[in-house]
Length: 530
Image (cartoon, rainbow, N blue to C red; front, top):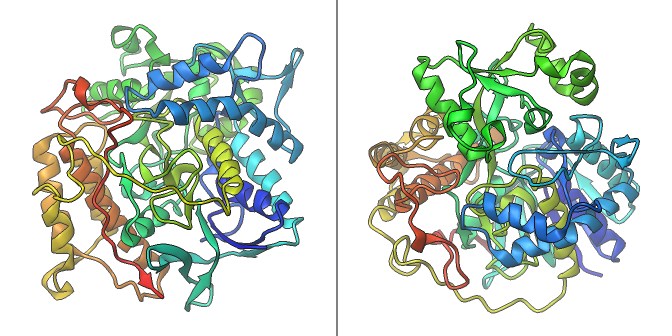
């Protein structure tokens, strides 16, 4: 019996914990907040899977590849789409009650899907339903030891093997947890940006800790901005499924503007819609655009989208009567800790599943409702790979981007100046960092803005790793990740998927993914040694 340390309690972490316990392992599950709090809980649209007779795995694969803008790993996409239906059936067995209609399980259409294949629960409360079912399942497993209010600080290494993690416990004391394998499932890093649909716990702790330990990270320039967050304090998500049901986007004069932007109009890929909204907002002096769902009728809106209806009502809006203001917000990180198709990272003993991982399944732009699917599929595969020989890693990178042994000049100063004495620098200010990334590394980017951001980030210092403050340790992670994101965005001199640069507005064909190329950042190699 092995001891498996699972860090994070979204779909990926919870499912990995259950699978590992059922396989006979002892599982220690730690989570920064309470067990049900994660990005999963806030997912609205649903889970995409080829479950229906008029659909196919091949069709889902093609839709995913098209959305990924040439950077998907075809092998990872095939795994995702082929194993997805079985993982959805697993969720049903674990108690997720997906919505039904007269034909059986109800399904919806979302942007860039060629079929209606998105299953949902509670109307627009799919993530909450999945989270609740898996939390209940975890609590029924005696082999799973749960530690809430416990934050990952750093990974522990023994000769390049990950053998545990340093964590900050609820009593404010740091301690070491040892394990035979560590499964990272810490989610994304929406807290890098001023406007995000993520909960406050999404500070990229897993990616930052893995990077400091020397793990390969990839595609971190690709941050997906959801086109339609409600433009009120808190930026609650307005699911893409609303546009799938027929809602349209209008400017301040009431005119539809997406018709001139893309043949699929409101159902174009997310990056296209988000940039179009941002451009329209610039024409309107920053005013949000309007999402018009009034034609759908009150009954459908309140039944199909109860969570959004409640958010509108809380903001004093009645979306059955009037269009509602929406704007883009940081939503999902396509990049992260690089893994193979068994969720194995470049460090033996370390797995990564869910948003913390870069599996290659999403490429430069995630297809709607593939996120929960990816977490389920690769959490299952990580547990199946426990105890198996670790593959020998060979790293190759496009010479146009990074040389893994000779970092580009633009990258070196942002990482190495971070090693200067802290008293020569200004301590990171999270609010300023969020505004800096929103302005310079957000929906629209340019070399000038990114270089300016790099200079500012290089002048900031991090709180110490020995801190006993959750906020301080989060700030340390956010500064590391901001530097990585800006470096990668500067290095990618093209526009592709969620990454758009005004000074390199065209896509460069030679930078598409191939088996001999993977964009990879130079590891920092800072971790706790035994």
